[in-house]
Length: 139
Image (cartoon, rainbow, N blue to C red; front, side, top):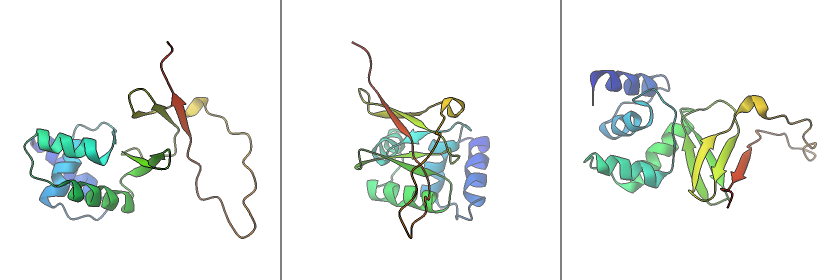
């Protein structure tokens, strides 16, 4: 890991008050070390870590992603109620889900217009609105 990537990863963890353990630093470097946003699954991040020769278990990846989400460093985007993607861009924005590839990408926020939301049921309030636009390639 280069010094620049270490600094970016360490700063990312520090801003959320997370201790920079070896596993967290390894995963943070894969997620934000180059300064770019990522959409990952626990499995894809695990594979990337293993591909770099890092000794990290899939359970550790899941636990670390959960800690990153709880600390506000990432957001979880669920597709079909069963598949979770983790996004390093925590600002509210829509997503494209590419059905053929099974991947998630950002959709342009400036093109999304939600004119009105339904009223929340009595005793409830709307916490957030997730927009996932499902795509498939034309035949």
